[in-house]
Length: 287
Ligand code: C2E
Ligand code: MG
Ligand code: MG
Ligand code: MG
Image (cartoon, rainbow, N blue to C red; front, side, top):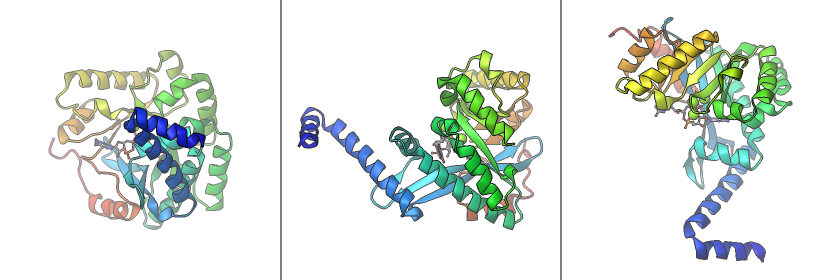
């Protein structure tokens, strides 16, 4: 049949394209199955964000993990994009939000008062059903709205700023705090940056990973800090991998830091343990 012919054509042309195509296809099939039934393949890892001046963890980011029986560990960088393109990112997002609420309850039960940041894709932000769904599920579970916040990547906002502003405003009106993720990689214009109803800019980790040694990155991060201040927004530096970078961010009055130096993304049980063992940690004691 036609599919067979296409396959053979591709194969004869370029086995690499054939491989990529098959990989994509199996990610779609396996991920749909994981979402439908084999839910033990999916999990969330949580990465704390440090409030630098308060020396305190007040929020964590939920990051999806997929350990597929068939495909092994698949990175969210790969499968999130594929789920978006294949039209079922909504199912992934619903799964993430549900699990985050389960885990949020565990954290509250453990006496940890925390806000969990959920990563949204462009499609989620434009989906008018998402917000009412989140609000009603929180109410059903008797959880406060302050349990969740949302991150949306800069490149998604840039695609259609006016529409994004409209939808993000709806999130704000429901009382959720918002962050622009991967800031600095999406060519935002000042004109609508000032109109974005967001509380926080997360400066992309590509500018932060080597902040302690790269003068160019230092200039960029300081510029983002000034920009954010003039718009009344806070800044999270993601990808903080060493103490010198953390100390630098403190000197520049950056509000939040997140990265392997503070804590890697970990499962909820480990997070509860981590909280207990880091309750008295002085993050800047040696600087
Ligand atoms: P992101 O939201 O910008 O998340 C930050 C990524 O940087 C995470 O990768 C995190 O593990 C990694 N990271 C954190 N600290 C450090 C560090 O100090 N050094 C380095 N080298 N990396 C660090 P991860 O978990 O692989 O996620 C990649 C991306 O996949 C996320 O980028 C986000 O865009 C997307 N993603 C993850 N989970 C979800 C989800 O539940 N929904 C959606 N829509 N996207 C998600
Ligand atoms: Mg994020
Ligand atoms: Mg990011
Ligand atoms: Mg990113």
